[in-house]
Each structure stands twice: as C-alpha cells, then as structure tokens.
Length: 79
Image (tube, rainbow, N blue to C red; front, side, top):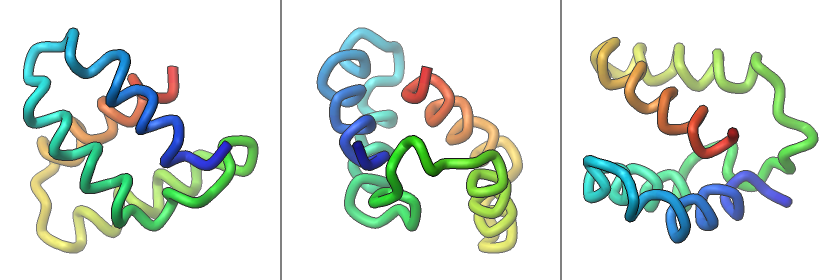
C-alpha cells in the first residue's frame, strides 16, 4: 500500500474525531496530492525518508514548530 492510501484512510476515519480537524484535513490533502513520499510503499519507508523530508521543510523556511506538528500528524497516521 502506498503512503498516500494510508493518509486517505486516516483522513476519512480519524481526522473528523480530532481537534483541529480542518487544518489536519488541509495538510493531509496537500500531502496526498504532492508529497514526495506519497507513492512509496509503506514497507519501504525508512526513518531516513522522514529525516530528509524534515530537513527539506526546514530548509524551505518552515518553522520548527510547523515541522514538529506535521511530523506528529504523520506519526499519528502511521500508528
């Protein structure tokens, strides 16, 4: 299963139950459409993939708080 399918399932099942659902919905929808890891199968994901993404986000000017929030959302979706 590609990562984007996990995000879609999480978006449908869990996000409506969460506080801040609207912002999470926006982030997940954006990731489903354009995230570089979206097509990667779950079994092939490695911590280095997320570390690379984190470093790129920080290099693009995202604040550390934003990146932490996004990593938390990714972690919640994966668990």
